[in-house]
Amino acid sequence: MLLKAVNEEGWGSGSPVTYSRSLTFVLTHDCPWHCSYCGFRTDAEGLLSEANLDKLLAEAAGQGAKEALLISGERPDSLPHIRRELERRGFSDFWDFANQVADRCAGAGLFPHGNFGRMAEEELIRLRPHFVSMGMMLESAEDHFRLAPEKKAAGRIAGIEAAGRAGVAFTSGILVGWVRLGGKLGGSDPGPRCNVHLALDHLGLGDHGLWSGRQRPPGLVAVGPSGLS
Ligand code: SF4
Image (cartoon, rainbow, N blue to C red; front, side, top):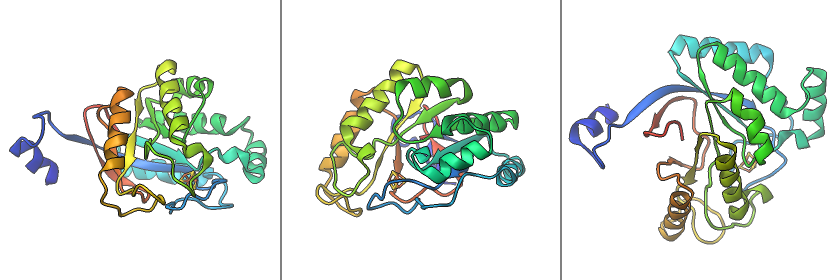
């Protein structure tokens, strides 16, 4: 209904606003870090099981989903229990697991989009044949304390540049509501948000998504012309 109103009233640039049905496949919530705002991470959940993957694929088919959003904690195979599970299930590493889940999604008629945090260029090249697109939230162009080391702005900008060199269709976005100090949500200072928009525009990602800082729930996701954000 909102999209209908936006399109009929010609909001913004006049470009039509579209959406596609997307289902989220969490490969693991486990993450070695403890970002202050995070409501996603767990310590020892383990990897998405075959049975739950089958359930998600059936759910996607039942709901008419077109996209599969594959996500995880940051560098989960830095955790010993994840490495043990990967070995036990016959995967060479976490990227091998992600690629095989993406292939299952593609085989079920879904477009796989991956978002696994900051990745090196060679890792992006390895995942490129298996994913229609990938992404990573820039979140903020400023560094905040109590965030994972992987979330330093310079490192994430370098990660987005690596995706460009790797030729990966890439999306990014910001976390709405950061305040300048402390990395808390709910601030009203527009400065940091302007800075992160400018940084994304500089990287050629003028069309980017907005997340609230809490994990986006599975289900319908509004997208702009460049795809899932
Ligand atoms: S790196 Fe990501 S998953 Fe891990 S604690 Fe930070 S926000 Fe949460």
